[in-house]
Image (tube, rainbow, N blue to C red; front, side, top):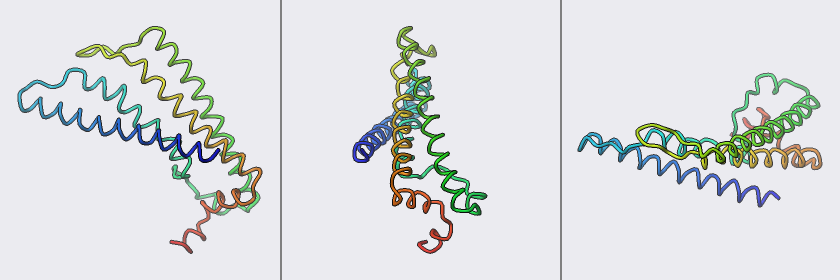
Length: 177
């Protein structure tokens, strides 16, 4: 299962990178054309906000969760007894998976509604945006699966549990840093 999650997260990360690269080219071209010949690319703002930014933000969430590189505030956690750290880690993994799956469910409903009405943004030009609405549920389902996979490992494997707990162990970071 981890192999599949790694592959899907990597694919989502690559797709996100492609969108961010395309955004860089698109915006740079828009600015260059605006100042060179006073003809900016119509619809740049709409495409950037509806496609590039959405893919750049929501597709990498699973990769961030998989590498356990999300923001963590360990001020109180580091002083808790081990049993409380175990409880907190289980609670966080459970809550994270549940929230990601709820966001995916809600996002999928919104995406289907957007598809049914053929949602568009109206600016200088009309930009069809319903395809970008499906990025959110995809990103959230992947992140939820990663958290659920970690939760399963946390509950069933002492080795995985200790590795996850060690990620937040200040003393261990100082020893290896």
